Length: 278
Length: 218
Image (tube, rainbow over all chains, first blue to last red; front, side, top):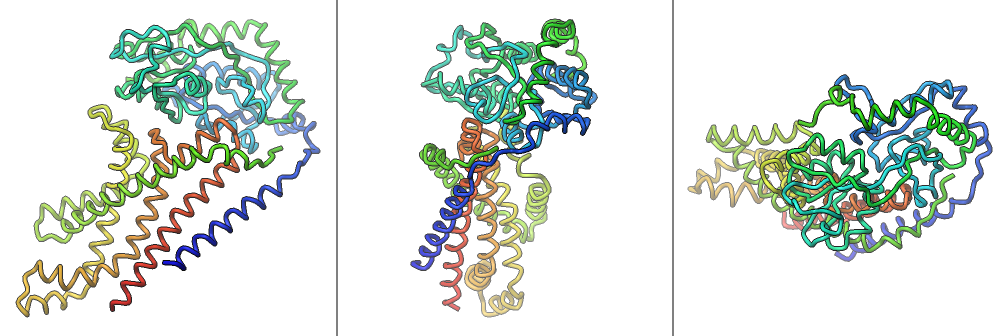
């Protein structure tokens, strides 16, 4: 028994030592080639865009298996503006910032809110969309009018892990339990299965999910937070960021933005080409 | 450029330890129910009854040929359409059924590995089938079963990380949560790997110790 214990103790010591050594190796390194990042992308002729499907109507998969949505439209406009091809890569939302940090993607367009915490590790473009948190509530709990009504012991609030909804809900709810899922689709399923009282998510998603499940849910769309969505790029990519900001400014002022906005959020003409939930 | 900063681990240590406890709890419960299922499964598989034998076969083949992640999602979200299952209950169910199928095969193989002359000799001196099983075959088979069984338990501890997808607050869920709030992916995942390593390796040392003691009785 004793030798057994010693062995484990020795192993833990080795593990700690490894951690300590890894810490020592963290000396600051400056990237010499950062100014040429945008040129490199133009030369490559391709931008790899990270996104997270299932976030209606920003990024979804249609019946043909194609990525569609407001963000996808924005990305394609950006590609046109910069004269490069756009390649999409799909991640869980919580995996998007790690993907940027590891340079697996050039930028992220995934309905991502600009927050101070995220700004510490990635850079954001100017806002391309203004949004806020809303509530999708199960019809089994008909008397909910504001978020405080949800904050009771035993209530489960489902959110998508790592989103601003997650951060807001984790902070706001003192009595209710906040359960975090990989993506808004699983959080929504938790509500439909009757395990959660409500899902907290951004206004457009709540509106769409409510439309899909109008017999079992109702929406409270009056947002209780205001959030600006931005395009995220790895830290230290000033040139690419400048190009993106130039595009955002031009795009938001132009007719394409209005068309895209109306198509995805107002008319919802895409409705029949995306598989209904039931 | 990414700067390493292990301070977050200290800050989040209480929640990491909570996650560790949850992982241990789920693993222990699943090991117990999985072993019971495995014993029942093995008894079915070696039974003379055609119905029981087929039941055992279907169970083992069905579980072994579908991914654990799908089983977890099916039990929680799929069966969740009909029954209300707490995430922890769904996790233990999924992990037990999964481990049980492999344990069935381990136990069956262990029993089959004892030469049939042993059973015949026991019967010839007047023992019943059950006496031959309990007094002669099982004591020998256990020693052969133990090493692969320990391997299966260790696999189960590691596989339990999948239950984080149904929001069970285990070690992996806690880690994902910390990464999404601090973005310290490297530090957190490395530390979590170390925790899993300590759990699994500790378990394997304990079993090795037990094996040694059993060998002394030979």
